Length: 424
Image (cartoon, rainbow, N blue to C red; front, side, top):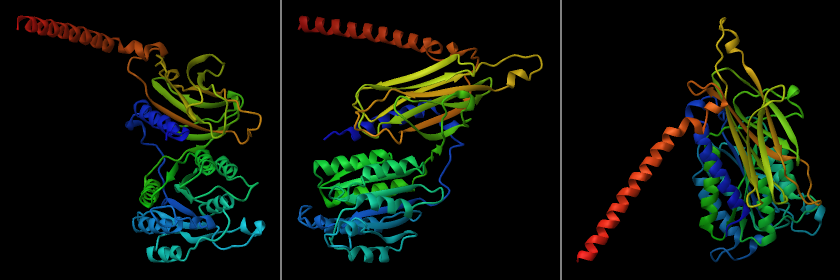
């Protein structure tokens, strides 16, 4: 079944493909890389409902244990892995006690497979489902350093410890700017569980997966652990301002921020003559929003004159909307040779037209990811109009000529086939 998350994932894939063309590999040498071993914590639901016998003829708990053993055998050496449980120790009816029932089963660090498997083998379905407290505990387990961090939550039911909403917990974690991703897996989930797990994942840029079989569970967890080991660019937290004059100056790189509904935020970039500014922005709708929205990325001078803009609109079918722009700064000729090398301050405005029902919380703001790159501009560029389609007319001419020739040849072949058919 296609969900909003699948559509959002498709939008992300399209954005990534476009980014390859927009930001060539030669310009990515300065991208940050993880300097520390990546950290992953598997958070496993051990509540009473895990006794249900509906996964390949065995209990959900047995399927989870089997999957964990397979995953532990294949964890990459460079990954620092930990395990946390929820609902594993308290079988009683006291909500205050049951909603605190989360503990770290195996500390985040170099993996001793035998010890980790032994710890998992002792688990038995027991108590409540305190997902929110477990996420807070896992975030604490992973804190510190610049490593890639990922929580993988495996559960068969929605949180039973309201009013601590785990979706709000995930949003608060995302708002801290610590770049911790939460992936969720639902074991034979119902609609409420699925919606809650999708919300948790989307709040931090993670993924949601519905699991019906043991092989699906082990395969997906392996994939997520392996993904944590892959070097990635970690966004740097940046806080835009209400006007350009006091906006932060951004160097080439990847940045994250938060923007409220209908807000405008400003950033600054220095662009030298002969260079080209390339920028893109993505805003994620990490909560319910009204249909029909858009994002605007606009470049202006310090005095407010618009240079170039990029915009994109959405209609509620995806949870991500992105826009980009390119600005080649003309090379200036100067007798001294000095004025022609003075950088221009370009103001970047990020705006959105999101709105939401009155029942939806507007804080924290929605996640913003801003990519900045400054490269050598196109040769001979004299102004913005010299860049883009105007420089590609020769290609359009070639395509038009090719189409004409193909049409003539196909027409000739068609006439010949008709003649052969008639003569026979």
